[in-house]
Amino acid sequence: MPKVLLIQENTATGGVSRISEHLTQGLHTHEWVTHSISLWQGSLALRLIQAWTQAKQHDVLLATHNFLPAYAAWALSALTGKPWLMWVHGPILPVLAFAQASTSKQRFLRWFYRRVPHVVFASHAARHSFEAFAQPLPPSQHRHVIHNASNIQPPSSLAQPSTAHPIRIGFVGRLSEEKQALQLLALLDHLPAHYQLHVIGDGPLMADMQQQGKPHLALGRLHLHGHQRVDANTFVGWQATVLCSAYEGYPMTALESLSCKVPCVSTPIAAMQEMLATHAPYMLASDASPQALAKAIEATLATPPEQRRQDMDALIQQHTPEQFARLWDLVLQETISREHMQGDAV
Image 1: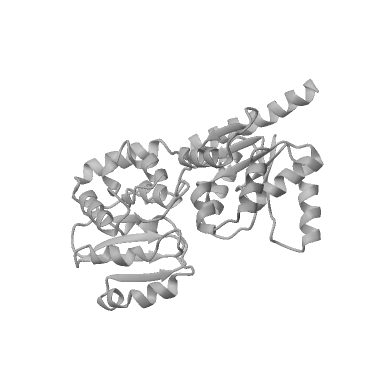
Image 2: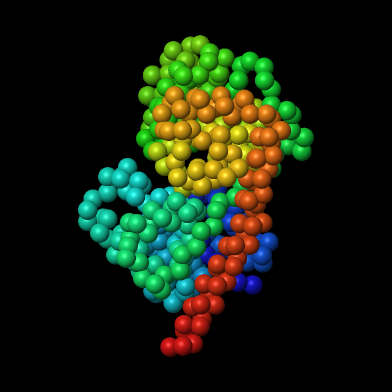
């Protein structure tokens, strides 16, 4: 059985960790042996020895995202001769802009990304951003898009969404600048008084949410639940989930919500246009303003429930765990085969 080593920065909760777990589960169904290492667990010397020892025992190395794990996978590949891939989740241009990356760091990243042999992107939007940032890219670099998938299991019998008041909408994510969490407060200002917003997550903007959201908290329209485990029960009590991020890779929250037959209404960022434009364009706001997002929420909930259900079914059929695992199996197998052929040709 082939073996793949997933190189992670840490095991903190979040979209990258969740989709990495999904990948591990999916590859097991294709008879892969998988192991993971975290670059931030244990002493530095122990981590380096463990990483080198593990890398030698695997057929292929996978950096679970395109910063520290990618640097480690590159070094381990050079030391062991094992092929490696880099997984890119988000659009590199806005990520670096939000991080205020220095010119020297951007110069290093361009140099580095041109030397990565195999790249997998979570969305076409992430691929286009990467190619715009790192151009010119070598023709020898192999690039693939594999959309994320949700393996969340909704209850066997889903109740029809309630039209009674209050209408509950939800947000799941880190309360941070890139998620534009404070826009959720402005969103409530543009929704009727019978709308409630339930926020699951924590982060650097929590104190601001608590302070600026006091009027909504007092009226019972805003509920800040903090960090919680996310599963099907998170979504099924809501009439809609909302995203207002400045950018996303290919958000797990949206896929998980749709899997539970709960619409996900979003600002028109590239990744969500990619996900929703074909089957459910009414779930996309016309622009990034809270006013437009509020109108899209009301328009979505005014769409006949049966149409929404059919549209969400069609979306999820394009993002099954089985397809996700199958495509990853093919890319990993091709990576190993291609490296072997190149080795035989030398």
